[in-house]
Image (cartoon, helix red, strand yellow):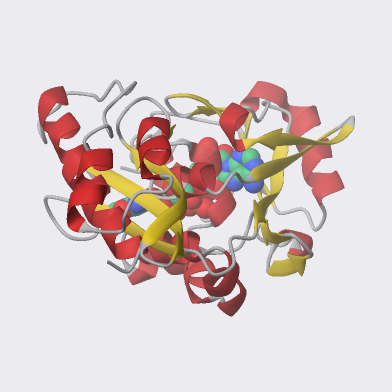
Length: 284
Ligand SMILES: Cc1cc2nc3c(=O)[nH]c(=O)nc-3n(C[C@H](O)[C@H](O)[C@H](O)COP(=O)(O)OP(=O)(O)OC[C@H]3O[C@@H](n4cnc5c(N)ncnc54)[C@H](O)[C@@H]3O)c2cc1C
């Protein structure tokens, strides 16, 4: 289908984009890579009068080292996140998860910030960002504010970003030397996961000193598997040690039931995928 008619601007700065948002209010929609928004417009599920393209704002692109954190610009593509040496060295889980997003065409157009702002519960980047304790920098007419990952994902397709605000960058605390793995279960290749698990582990000798685990599509937002994290602290990095902890993966979750699987099936998957993800992250 062809989208409803809309006006289009492509400002060159965040300030101009915010001014356009303020001017058009509810009638405006931001476009980043367009990989989620364009299908929505084509199906006429949304019909904004003004589309504000962030694609010409250079300051929103790129990945930089900022001491204890990496800073990833909102308009950085999935491909760039996946391919970045900085991300591989300090936030390996994000690199692994970005490699699992859709197909190469979508990874070259879709953006890190767009995916996180879209907040699809089946999106592959929310759980890894949550697991690593990312912080979200959001610009509005009153200046910028920083929101912790625990407070960023509010509900299905809903985040802490206000209608008159723009996500400009994501700060990711460095997890240098941590092993990581993103285990995604799909029915067909290049699609959103039925369930997925992101795991990052710091090992010490033969045991897991610290683990950060988050689940995709086990509720209306990405979820930390805190019970698993607790159980893994000090556990042996062995099949048995990890399996006992992974059995707690579904604690506190509220998975959906749909044609791909019911809630009980997803709970079962969460345990299996957590075990696999942790074993791979711990190099066991
Ligand atoms: C066939 C197909 C398969 C896919 N498979 C997967 C998959 O396996 N895993 C996965 O995770 N994703 C998948 N995706 C989605 C893809 O990752 C998109 O790139 C991503 O969800 C949205 O990023 P975008 O840059 O394209 O955002 P857009 O589509 O441009 O925008 C998405 C939404 O976010 C808002 N937005 C964008 N940027 C900002 C910003 N900086 N500040 C505030 N609001 C903003 C927009 O207004 C819009 O509401 C798939 C998409 C398609 C078409």
